[in-house]
Length: 101
Image (cartoon, rainbow, N blue to C red; front, side, top):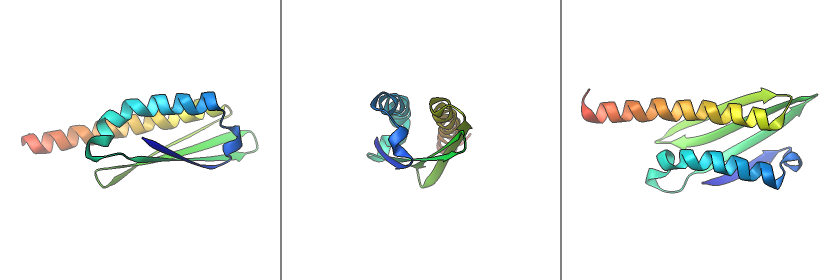
């Protein structure tokens, strides 16, 4: 999965980028069935609050996960968890519609 960072990217260390790539690689098994996908990671800093928005396209649907916390890593994991739940919901809907359930 190709990651595109925008916003306050100077706070993303190489260790943090590896963790993000590792967590999103688990999702890429479900998302990248039609080819390689892009994930847009947008970061904003408001006072002491890190706001992260991750957007991924999945079968012509935009999956958006947002997280906000004082810690950057925690806000990233919140956003990834929200995307994981959306992927789970969408994949079960697609599978059930193809099976005729």
